[in-house]
Length: 119
Image (cartoon, rainbow, N blue to C red):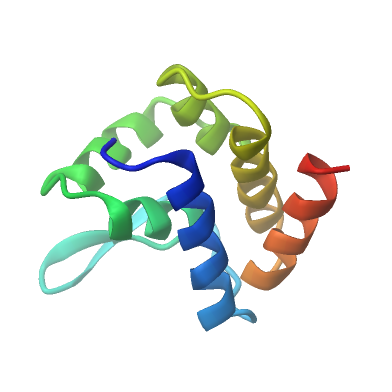
């Protein structure tokens, strides 16, 4: 991935600020092909990765990876930790993903991530 964890956290926060009441529909870790014939993620972390990546195949990469990982909250952590990311920012992304997978609004997911990762 061509962005930092700090940039990812910032983009997640930005998206939650733009659509604070958005709740990701079930199943939270799946993708839909609706925008211009191209698949786009619909979860909070997936949108942030999509927005930041300059990889034209990022959604296909995420879909392939997602099909092999099937746990709430574990998805973001698995992806980041599998790429060598550790620490508070990686934990924060995990908690944001976990909260939104559990039905929290995007703003609430950010609040929960703040509470859990920086407690």
